[in-house]
Length: 370
Ligand code: NAD
Ligand code: IPM
Ligand code: MN
Image (cartoon, rainbow, N blue to C red; front, side):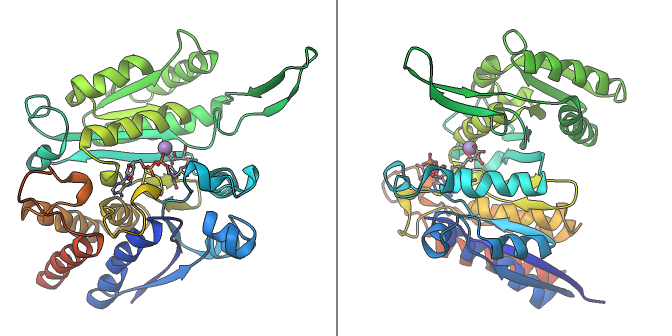
């Protein structure tokens, strides 16, 4: 029997449509070579949706996402200057991404930080620091904390402008995400780094309390508590110590971009945002307005997000591993994208489209050999 899946496709802004065009080719190949029927449902989302529909997360897009089995989202947002053309509340981040996360309560954000041994030349770190490559799973809480806490701004009694932004968590919110951390640690190296700031923040004190309670259910997992500032340094000096890391929303936002740095580019950062009934998949990076329209963006993060969807939403583990192998094969054959290029004389990075072509060629080979 053919398995049919509906995928909402939110291409997004700037480089979004360029990398999305390559990523959805994976579904075409699977439809051709497997007994699968992926139906793609494109929908407007982000700044481009604001300009065409007056809303960055239009009602019709909500309905399409509600009806989909999974959502594939490209990066959204504009440059600092361009953003000013849109009212603050409708800008893609506040108007589209955060409401999408809230709508499906996608509390567990999986951000794999992976660089295989034969790709370590892409990292700015010395080979001696990452002799085995990098393999970390960063789990970021995605629907709480400062992003979703109470906010307020105004003029105080002294006539000065003020703003309040609140870092809020309940024990249930903490419990559900740290549990994901323990489950992943159990499947991997039985080591969980808890990233916190309990020397200052009360939210971290509660976070750590709850984490230690949950730990009693996972005695086989070793927990290492590390302050977030120290974790930032450790990620540069010795990333090999990390396997699974779990942390609150804002810490995860910042450390995951730093992690993209140790890989050599944010273009190598796919992600999965998992909720109780729905998941969506997106690159960890933004819409890269600085390189939009040039066909030079690295589509690895977007294609990798499809691989994560195949595995995590549909249990298509073999197909997912073929997608990873196909991308690895392209790098192993000596190709690079502009963001990873050494700039050495004679090097010539491939375009977004060419990278897509090469990956699909390998993927088709793997799908037809099997
Ligand atoms: P960014 O992540 O878009 O770009 C940072 C740097 O990384 C840039 O130099 C960019 O060229 C490079 N880069 C990112 N992805 C790349 C890729 N696939 N290939 C090659 N190079 C890549 O961050 P920014 O410039 O601070 O933000 C731009 C916009 O994106 C902002 O509006 C921001 O709010 C938004 N944003 C959206 C998301 C999302 O949709 N989830 C995530 C982060 C930022
Ligand atoms: C990310 C992005 C988003 C975040 C923004 C664009 C809302 O930076 O997904 O990392 O801060 O979560
Ligand atoms: Mn971010």
